[in-house]
Amino acid sequence: MKLILLAAGKSSRIYKKIKKNKCLINIDNKSLIRNIIDNAKSVSLKNITVVTGFKPSNIIRDLKNYKKIYPGNKEIEYVEYLIAICLFEQINVNSKDQQITSLSLEQFNKVIKKYPGSVYAQDLKIKLDLIYDQLAGKEMYVARYYQERKKWLASLRRLNIIIEKYPTTIYVEEALHRLVEIHYRIGNINFAKKYASILGYNFNDSDWFKKTYKIIENKDFVIKKNKTKKTLKEKLKALIN
Image (cartoon, rainbow, N blue to C red; front, side, top):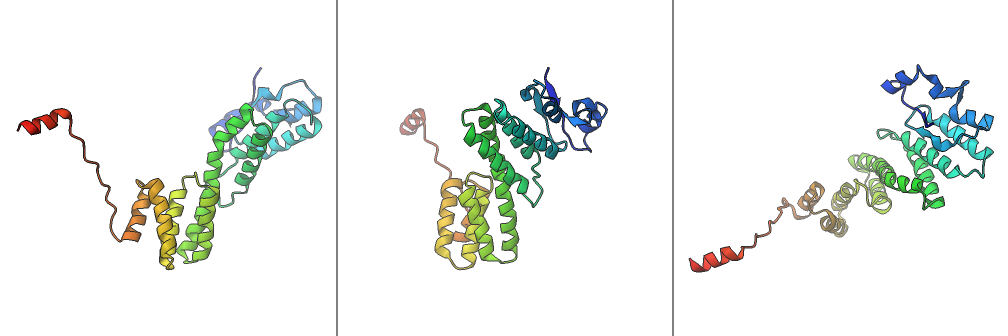
């Protein structure tokens, strides 16, 4: 039988439903995982699915205890995967503190490195982009804060972190543009042009490049439309006429 370790915030509809059916969360006031550990039941942890969010710290604690008690168990890689998922589900996109995001990344990399050919590693690789976006977002938040207060060097440090550590995230275009803005403002024109050319080469159809172009060229960027080639029929018609 497939057991589902239900999880949800206390204000959610899911929580209100599962509150009436506590056996899905607890057995004799113990979590399912804790109960399995204490009674050494031959219940596979792979029959437990973590959905999302109900006291994930407790779930992680129990999973870590499971690792200590059964260090050589064949399901340890799945336990490590569940820990990664529990951490991932705690990520708060609106939080300034991204400690949980960093812990998630650490656990993700641990599973990917230790079990590279597993289905768990493949799943976590797909989710990695979301974690990188989150960490890059934190750096961008701080970079904007410093730029607004004309703390140029502090802002540049944060923007360079995005370029160097998170070059595939959704924030890289904005980071390149802000590097242009700041370098142009403090008189480093060559650096400004360097980052502008990188932005133009990789993202020349983006709004950030249009803003950058206006800074460097002092005029709006106009996209040149390619001339449509005439068909053979049109060419012949033109010759006849």
